[in-house]
Length: 221
Image 1 (cartoon, one colour):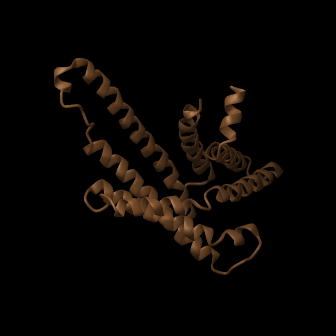
Image 2: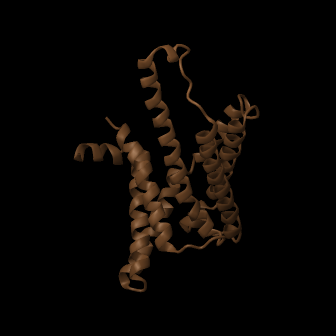
């Protein structure tokens, strides 16, 4: 267990999820303890970890726009799923770019007067990206069907093998809906479109972090 945890935190994604979990726990405890000295300390922890995690996704726009490029060169406009993915990754890419523009301000290196406006736009694109992701997952759950071999109806054993694959895919999609649905509350809170408070935000962050960390954990040998 200790060796596996060591491998987990030594991966970029595993370390980021670990820091995110500490951040959301700190946020919840700080909100519950309110104006105590502990709350002030934990709020500092939360803010510092939030900044640290920005470094992990600094180049996230590269992967996002590569996905956009692949979709444009493939079936991006030929299917509903392609259109949703195209919109999702475009919004994610714009979110990463706009957030990166304010990194020096967040580090306290170079303050800019337009930080709040740019971050509002970044969080708006993040909200759109997560919304498209939820819609895409629900669409896939409702309208996608597993690809079965031609002789599956004549072979019961083949049917038994196909069903678990489809079940696993559906489970993955449902988990993605839950994760993105939880994370949707963060930009809604930041934009003040639907304020829910630190306890709710921290708790839903904790849930989405544990679910995504579980996927990373299970992939480790």
